[in-house]
Image (cartoon, rainbow, N blue to C red):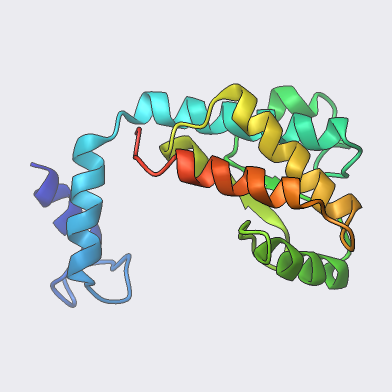
Amino acid sequence: MIHERVETLSNFRPLSGPTLICNPHLARVAALGIVLEETSWTHCAKRAVDNALSVADALLDEGIPLRGTAARKFTELTYCHQILIDVPLDEARRLRDHFGRHCIDMDCFLRLGVSEITRLGFTVEERAELGRHIAALIKNENDVASEVDRRIGELVESRRGVVL
């Protein structure tokens, strides 16, 4: 049943309708099938939004500007798994490289997604702590305590198993 839906959406037969992928990457299709079968999506989606809000709140508490906060009722309206740190593009690129040196990967727009920490089952306390460490990396770019790096490493190591 799932394979029929994947086949319909991915449309491996050329000229039989709209195609939603550039070409069939069979390993990705197999991985997608496994994830669709094993993941409890109703819980996962809510957790991802809750995680985004937790990290965003921690960043805001530390004075880190976020995009979208000018909207009325920002926290009630946020429904996404992403947080956007609000800095000019040149600074964002520099900070992206800085974060990478501390084992936090972001794109050049400083878009921070929480899908992975959701999948790994980060707790409320761990999410808030992660937000505080990200804030510390932004505020103290040239003088980051080794304690921050150690704690980030511990958080990563403690969450090697998949929860969702």
